[in-house]
Image (cartoon, rainbow, N blue to C red; front, side, top):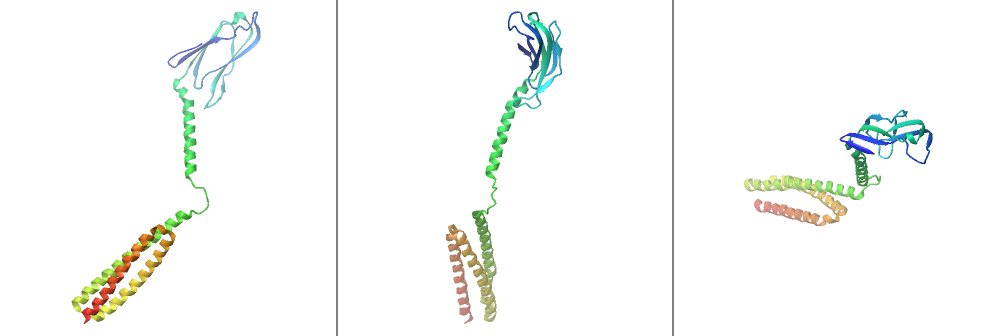
Length: 236
């Protein structure tokens, strides 16, 4: 029979039980396995000699530090010795949550490990799609840089040149500077054209944007041509 008050427990049971009439036992050994975490043992023996052996530990499923085992032995027992032995011990009920928590933590570790393993890429092959996206991003950035150079180095300078010609009507100066600007513009547009072709080949979905870029550069070239014609008019 097991009873308790708070963390104080009492286990009471007959050292030997009635198996048949005129029972005689030469020697008996009883092992009492208590819950993991039990401590502070106090024994109340019946009125005959019982020898307590060394305490032992036993580990079962989900145990961490083992369950205490109390060992008792007695000799020359008969029906008159069927009396109760009482074991008092302390046990914290929180320890009952230990095994369920171990199961929960084990499943959490398994699930987390599966999630991490599934998301990791252990292949040694090259991800061609990822590499292509990186190359396209690099080419787009290079195209933007060239566009900026065309705007700052060609368009703005040409507008300033036109304003200077209007003010000074210096045709010779216009011709020299315009030659340098045209050379720079040709270099930058050739580089941009090569980049747009690479982008279109690597990412067909960007073909519309590449076409729009080419259209705008065509408009820019027409504007520069018109500026050159304006120089001829002003030079008259």
